Length: 374
Image 1: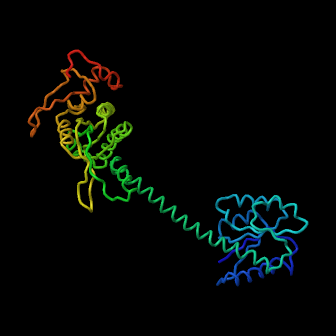
Image 2: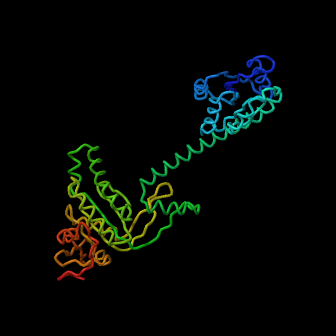
Image 3: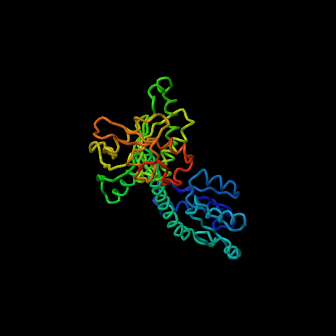
C-alpha cells in the first residue's frame, strides 16, 4: 500500500481544504498505479509526529510545504540520512515563497500550489515507481549483503580449522576454478609437540577443564608459530604438528614456546627435524585432508618421543641447516627402531638456557664454541 506523508502543507489549496485535495490525488494515483487499495495519507504539522510516522510506518512519498524553516531543515536532514535518501520529497510553494527554494536543494520536485491535480499525479507517478524499484533493489542488495556476510563468516570459520598453507593454496587454485590441490614436495623444518602424561592428567579432570588446559597451551603455540611465519598443520588431541620453511626460525619458535609454557600446568616435549616432505591429499572425494607426509614428519615425532617434558630436541640435520654450532655435551645419539643408523640430536633448549641466550636465541647463533661439533 502506498502511504503519503503530508507535512506542513498549510497554503491556500484549490477546491477546498487539504483533505479534499489529497483525496483527489490519492484516487487518481490509485488508478494510475493500478493499486488494489487506495493510497492513504498522514496529514501532520509537527516534526516530531512526522519523525515518529517515518520510523514506524513505510512511507512512499512526502508532500510538504515550504513556509517554515523547521520544515526545510527537516527535509534536508532527511535526504542526507542513508535510510531515507531515496524517499521522494515533493514540495509545494507559491510565487511569494520562491526565495526559500534556494534552501531546499534536496527536494526531488518543487511544484506551485496552483498546479492542477492531474499534473501533480503525472509528476508523482514516476517518482513513486522509481521509489518502488529502488526499494526492491535495496532489498535485493540487502539480501546479497547478508549472504555475502554469511559467506565471509563461513570463510573465517573454515580458516580456523585448516592449515594456513592449505587455505592459501586452495584460494589460489579456486581462482583458477580448480577443485583439487596438487601434491608438491619441499624441504621444511617439522616441529612436533606432545604432552607427556596427558592421559593421566585427563583422567582426574572434567572434559571441559581438559579442553581449557589444552587451549591455553595451544594459544601460546599458535601465536608464536604464526607470528614467526610458520604454520600449524594439525592438532592431534594432546599433540601438534607445526612447520616452517626456515629451520632456524623453527628452532627459535620451539624455544619460545617451551619458555612461555614453563609456568603452565601443561608440559610439552618438542622435537624438530629438517628434511623433505610431500604435502598431499589423504582421503577420498567426499572427505580428505591436505597434510604433510614423509619420513621427516615421522622422525620429528620420534625425536619428541624421547624428549622429557620441557625439552626441545633438534636433529643434527635441523641444527646444521640452521647454521647453529652446539657443544658436544648437548649432543645425543638415538637408535630408533627401523633406522639403520643412529640419529644425532641436540638438547637445544638446555644449550640456549645455559648459555644465557634463551631470551634472544638468534643472537650470535653461529659463533663457534670451544669443543663444539660441526
